[in-house]
Image 1 (cartoon, each protein chain N blue to C red):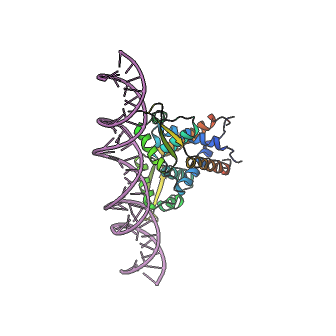
Image 2 (tube, rainbow over the protein chains, first blue to last red):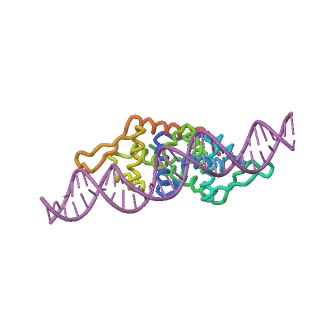
Image 3 (cartoon, rainbow over the protein chains, first blue to last red):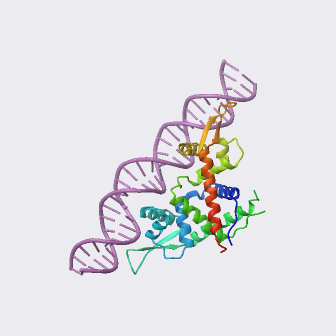
Length: 117
Length: 117
DNA sequence: CGATAATGATACGGACCCGTAACGATCGGG
DNA sequence: CCCGATCGTTACGGGTCCGTATCATTATCG
């Protein structure tokens, strides 16, 4: 059951959602942070710094800093892995789940408004 | 002819495309720059700094700087309006059109891979 | 012509992010 | 027990972007 969408529709959807994000001031999240956030909330736990860095193809400090800023916003939390105390487990939060849900609704709503062009 | 998409599909699409952009290093474009680029290439000309600033709800220096960096990448060009020399008309380029087209193809391709979940 | 308005560009101080390199903490094998 | 490997974090130097305020240029209107 593939999702059918034409190039012109894709571009209008992409533009409109980005306009909404910029206008709402929610563009605090960069492309990398968005990818990290959605990976945490869509993929099965547990999530580690190293694992996220590998999935995104970036270095570990990038993940650490992204978790720092996202943690300040309350979108994620970190916890030591008690079985291997070198590891840090990234956990979801209520605020993070709400932010992800809001993004989903935004995309869905803007897609619905896209006419056939 | 609305575009039907469910929240879970929207999130997977959003994540996958962002992952691609980050991995390809094309995340040079911030959310604002993406909105500006797509506005220039989707909306009818002429485009001015002031008009773009109003559409995005940001200040004029943001547009000027975005045009600076996007100009370095060859994605847009600026030209003085000869009829009102205070204005600057933003023009499209071949490289910019190609970049937009590539983004559209990326979204379309990733949407096609999204199963019904 | 002179005053006012409008446009886009620039200066500035501050904040954020990057990649490389180094670090402390922790695990595991010899 | 110790030494190497692994994990996440931090330090550093450099770059980019932000918003406010200001600027030079140009148009408009009296």
